Length: 392
Picture 1 (spheres, helix red, strand yellow):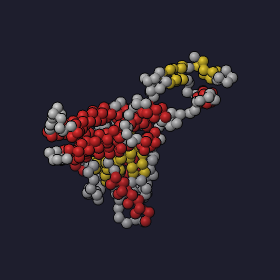
Picture 2 (tube, one colour):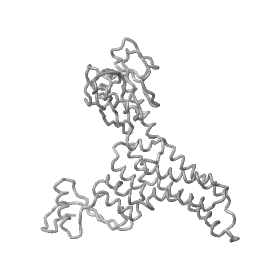
Picture 3 (cartoon, rainbow, N blue to C red):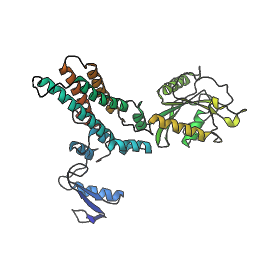
Picture 4 (cartoon, rainbow, N blue to C red):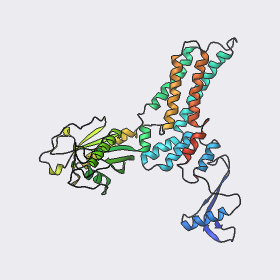
């Protein structure tokens, strides 16, 4: 079809016009879509012509997705997943976001909610109609078993050690070691560009320098830090303090020492540490495997082995080979709140006070409903949709 400006009849472009009828459209409303060539002049002319039509205005950021949420086409978890799809930069991030947007967590949440609502109904019936013969005794064992099943499933999802959030935000790796251990040279080699200044002068690196990598689909933030040593001028001391802070906050640490240096213990304890022996091209001896991975950022020796280890560790830390479901802190908070209420319910089993036990179930269900967006969502909608592109 030919798209013309309704004001003067001028041709804007030739393209396709599609109509999506409610309620099966993305937003659940009647929608029209123009598919045009993507040149700036074409887009500008089409928007200008549409903007002159009465009742039309540009969409706000995330407005289509917000309409889909309001009309029940998406719940809040799926909405967050769609936002992550838009912002995904690596294959691993995209796969995780698509699971969330596709309803993997939402279906689990709805199942848990249904089980808890059914359990709560039985318990409240025993409270409200205790004198009715057909209500009967609901039985603590039966209620406890149903709640226990939901709690076990919840705890399995929560027991992911933050892998989903780490995959979404990236694995943070710090390069640490004494001065002149080759940290900046290694960073440049891994980044394939001159991101850091390399110099034989000890203490050249003062501040933390970051580069972003994609390792086998996992986003990795690699940080070059100041050489760790005592003394130095006041600025170098600050650099060392920042280096230690970055090491403490990192998911993984590459501890570098030159191959010919006497191997010693790092001046800190870190659960996830990979020892790397640098400058093997200048070494007078072969580096034993027990001393770490021998590499040369100049010749490339050992770099493939180091990248293999980095990729393997990053995939493990991000849960790339597992079906993790939690990607946002809000999701973890709501699921944890539900689990806490269910644990409290089980501790009360067998005690008097059925009303209090029913209240625990109500609070657990409410936490799941807040997660999916059934209740109390206005305070989080603005934050979620602020990260969306205009329209979508």
